[in-house]
Every structure is written in C-alpha cells, then in structure tokens.
Length: 280
Ligand code: URA
Image (tube, rainbow, N blue to C red; front, top):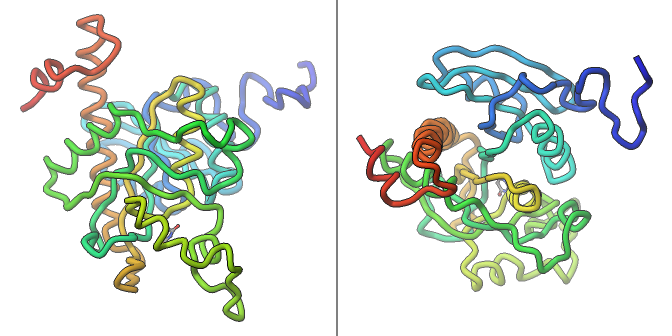
C-alpha cells in the first residue's frame, strides 16, 4: 500500500483520518450533535443501531429509523471540528446534515425547552471564513427546514423558526462575562444588537455547516433546544434536548419520503404536490 499523501490525508481504502469512517459506513442523512454522549441518545429512537467509530470528539453510529438508513456523528464544540466532520462525512457519501444541539435564546417568547429551527446563521465564527468571503450567506436548505417544521408539527413540539448567530466563543463571544468579569468593549451590546436584527438564538456550529453545505451543493438544517434564555436570564441544562432529537429523527424520515417521491417524478426539488402526496 502506498503511504498516505500529506495533502489528501486519507488513510488506506478511503478511511478518513479524523472520523475513522469510510464510504458505506454512513447514510446520506446524518444527524450532527456536538456532544459525543448524545449520539447513543439519538440512536435510542432507532429500530436498530450500531456503533461505527470513535476517534477524538467524533463518535459515529449507524442504524435504521422507521426503515430509513440513518447516521449520527458528533462534531465536538465549535466550528473547526465541525468543518472536519462535514468534510469527512461528505467524502463518505453523506449529503444531508441536521445539527441537533442546544442553544441560548435571545427572545422572551422562546421558553426553555422550546426548539429553534434555523433558516440561516450569522457567521460569528472564523472557520467558514477559510472557505468563503464574509458576504457569502450561511443559509439552511429549504427542504430540511420544511422537514423540520413538518416533524415538529406532527410531534406537537413547540418550535420557532428564524435566524441564528453561530459564535466561536461560548462565554465572551456570546456577551457572557469571562473570568474576572472580563468583557471587551466590542462584545458589549451584542445580545441587543442581534435581537434588533431579529436573530433568535446563539449557538456555535450552524453557520459553518450551512456554508460548507452550500459550497458543496449539500443540504443542511439545524434544530436546537433552548436551554438558556438571555432575556429572562434562565438556564436549565438538558431541557428540550429529547424533543430536538425526536424532531431531527422524524425530519430524516420525512426527507427520505420526499426524496423517493422526487426521484419517482424526476424532480430536482420538493414541490407542494410532493408534500401533499406524502402527507398521511
Ligand atoms: N449553546 C450556546 O452556544 N449558547 C448557549 O447559551 C447555550 C447553548
């Protein structure tokens, strides 16, 4: 076997250097939690599940959810490791990503435990700038957004839809005081500024997932449980996470149904007709 190239870095037979997965190991539909421990929790809802690989912060499971081949890979916290996950999953055939995470809401009406479905994200992270100019948009796929809304409706979960801000920093970059109350002047007022632009929530990975997916012609969406509210100053770790997971799993089933129908009708995009014809 020839030695791996430093430029391409793949190991033998297409094995990916960080995720330790290869083509055939993952579905086209991949759920992306940040936390490695959330992967088995996601898989608990599947009819059948198996562990694929664990390496660093990246844990991958495969399985079947209501008959649909599905995968989940943890991204770790933040944009750099998330971009690695997207790169390597895409090389293995994944084309549809749904981030399943937690978030800090910026609006009073988003109650703790509600979920937020992102239509796009403000790029307050550095990784996507390695890929595209700052003016390049971070937008979710309308098909994934629609599937997430449909899933939330069918499961009766409280949801909000709109813009997210993705930051590289959980503390100071989200206008939380750092150690010894450090908060530089340029971060002061950030919460109010984002609120004034109708941004709903803070998290740390959606924008890089959206930018990379748009560049590569893949689909992506994000659904996050509000565990904090910056307006009411409430914080409840873990609340709503199971709902976000249920919605993401169900959105994959819905997308797979729409995708089959698209293929049957030789359509490139989901249409209202397709949605109606697959509605139970
Ligand atoms: N994740 C974040 O990035 N911010 C929060 O406030 C909560 C979860």
